[in-house]
Length: 158
Image 1: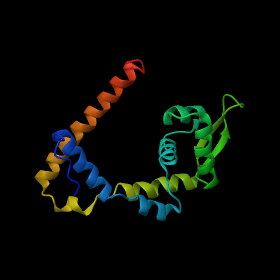
Image 2: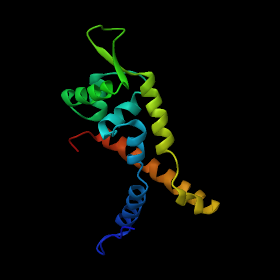
Image 3: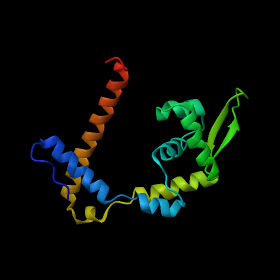
Image 4: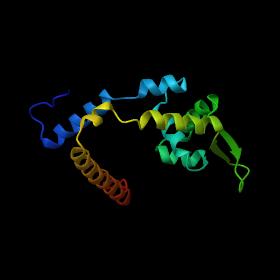
């Protein structure tokens, strides 16, 4: 297990423990083996975002916080694997929508099955510990969402 340097505080200690646990239970190798390729950060974000609806390249670039050329490269790689396709936009034929293919939807189902499988260590915790962990993580996720909303509201100047 990773031990934080002695000069860190409780927040850094908790984060280092969480990070060590997540890294020790990484599913990247399992995912790459199941899909036949590594699902890099950009490819994964786009693939999972498209599960909700087809988007234009500019919408995907905004979502990634990336420029259009990088986003195009990422979409090209997903398209080469048969996971997405470009379609004419129904309202503006000059624009294209990027949409999941059947293989893309299957890749997401496979990824979900792998990534959402809990590590064995959770089975060793008694129900009351799992309840407490759920309560704490729910609060943490809520605080993180609130902080991200505040950051977006403040904009880049602040």
